[in-house]
Length: 250
Ligand SMILES: *[C@@H]1O[C@H](CO)[C@@H](O)[C@H](O)[C@H]1NC(C)=O
Ligand SMILES: *[C@@H]1O[C@H](CO)[C@@H](O)[C@H](O)[C@H]1NC(C)=O
Ligand SMILES: *[C@@H]1O[C@H](CO)[C@@H](O)[C@H](O)[C@H]1NC(C)=O
Image 1 (tube, rainbow, N blue to C red):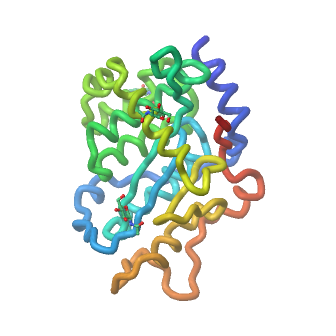
Image 2 (image 1 turned 90 degrees about the horizontal axis):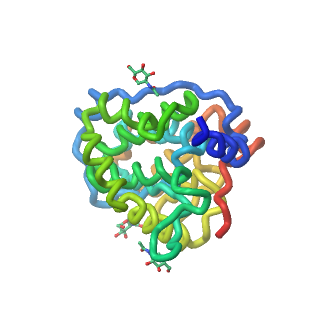
């Protein structure tokens, strides 16, 4: 239990979002497999900068972002997930500011994105672990993702190897560098960028932004017809309380 104590404190301190109750959405894995092929030409870049244990990120991923794969939005979006952890080089080694446990799941996500580069594939793992994280802390580090890898058929030995060889931390550090170079800089997570535009507090309305940016014709079914709104029901309350989890300033 000792391991999770500081972690819980960190989450409570950084993420008041935690107290907004989640509405459960679950990814239909059959649908994911039967998705139409992506068109790529003229696609809109949608990037999510997130922290694995930030409840605001977990809600966004499991409730909102999942729509990309539950609808035909997938056909016009190049989705990238960029996990963030405060990894730095200390004495020649990559370390996390408050100990490596703080970055562990972020490094695991970095590994999974690296090992299964197809976003349809790694999104399933990320969605599953984020959903599990909303259910509360688990007993061991590996328990944070092992059920998901077992259930979804991701090889746990490959994930463990990626982490234990230090590759996961290296990837996370690279993502950290990328996040630090964002213009304008990110202020909190989840931080959603559509093409080069950060959506800031409007992040939950990403569908509308993606559709507006998409120049192709016809637009996907998922796009709002004129004069209808796609805003998530919780947007108002969420932004009034807190737009997300603040990233530590470095
Ligand atoms: C993992 O799965 C086992 C068996 O299905 C279950 O008992 C356990 O609670 C799950 N652990 C988590 C963290 O969800
Ligand atoms: C990240 O940036 C630092 C400082 O600019 C640099 O020393 C380091 O090599 C970079 N690391 C990676 C993995 O890109
Ligand atoms: C989308 O991302 C790709 C790859 O990073 C880049 O080459 C392209 O210019 C981006 N498109 C837009 C509209 O930002």
